[in-house]
Length: 342
Image 1 (cartoon, rainbow, N blue to C red):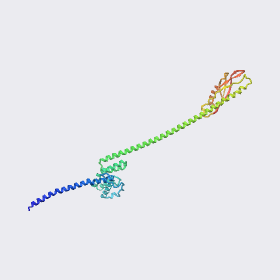
Image 2 (cartoon, helix red, strand yellow):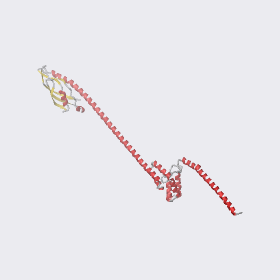
Image 3 (tube, helix red, strand yellow):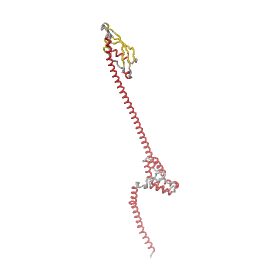
Image 4 (cartoon, rainbow, N blue to C red):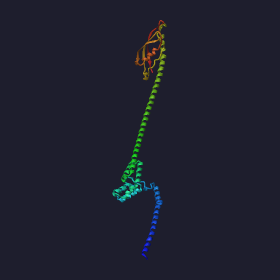
């Protein structure tokens, strides 16, 4: 047989097999991709959602922070990577301090600069870690938020997200300061209002007490005036009875002394009434032929200059039947003591 024919047959057979192999490989790849997108990935996303995580973030294995690993400096790169992966699975990207994925990966890079696993992990998880730092800011845990931002800055110092996080942290701090200032101002206003209310109440109590005292003083003055009026009425009733015997004393009906026919009670001085002061005034005066009183003078008084004017005013308005001498009216003089008692 011709060898050229054999080689040609073999070449033709190989050319026929190659398209079949390629087609089979394409079908396998398509089926694998379809299985991934239609079965495996939806299942993983469902598991992520059931665990409360984001489909693109590692699944949290627990909520309690694990204690910091012992003697981190003595750990090998592989041990640090293992701790970092476990921290990723437990959502400990940036916290707690000393026991989080970013610190483990950065420790790996300190021990082995350029480690591709740590570098890729920090780059890929940076957005999720930034979200965790933003949550710390929203929760107003400002000290830990600042620590997390500093930790992110070590991983990617030029990332623009750091500028946004720092601005938001500064804004939240200023907002908290304003809220605290407003609360302090409100508390101060409440204290001032309470002080003013207390002062107003004290002033109202003082005014009420003053009004009570004034009412008591007015009542006391009214009682004193009523008592004085009663005494003046009693004194007026006694005056004619004293004068009548004097008029009947002379044996000669044509000659007699002056007889009081109308008297006016003296007005009790206000100052003396307020101080509950009593006294008397002795007066001398002339009774004219017409029965009027003139030339009234103070002979003696106790106390002096307290009741003088009231006594003079009262006696000056008295009326007498003038004294007579042999039936003829004549002027006469008289002394009279005026009592002032409450």
